Length: 143
Image 1 (cartoon, rainbow, N blue to C red):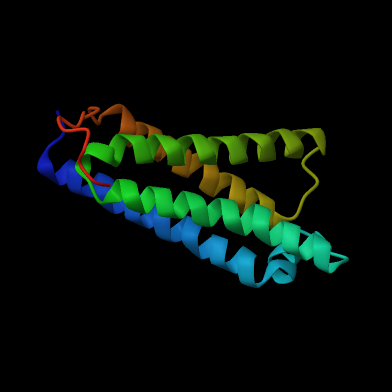
Image 2 (image 1 turned 120 degrees about the horizontal axis):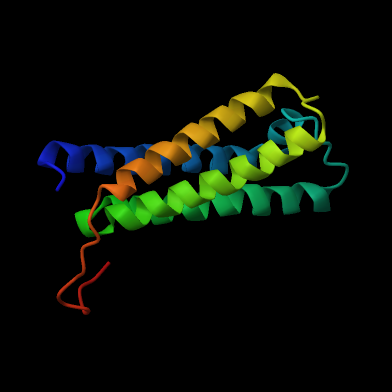
């Protein structure tokens, strides 16, 4: 059973993940061309820019809000850590497959992203694996 200190770190990790996803979400939403340019993606039209903002920015902002909600209650820590872990392993896994298929020919920013994603997923899963699922006794409790 985790100690109070370990439980506190789980909450802090969720807040850190929420702010990380939120920061990237805002950046993708308000500066889509600049963010796309980091990986060599060109957004040739307003439609492309809007869709890029919605897909990358919107998804990350939505996840950030969910993680912040989970960080507010110990009973949701495990759920939030699993959500973050699966998200990061999904992104990192597809990035890794892409790098392998491309023969490793990519800019350093992709390798940095891969390292952050895989390390973040491993830590989130490790924390989640040692956190008991807690069930609310009163289903009418507010979020």
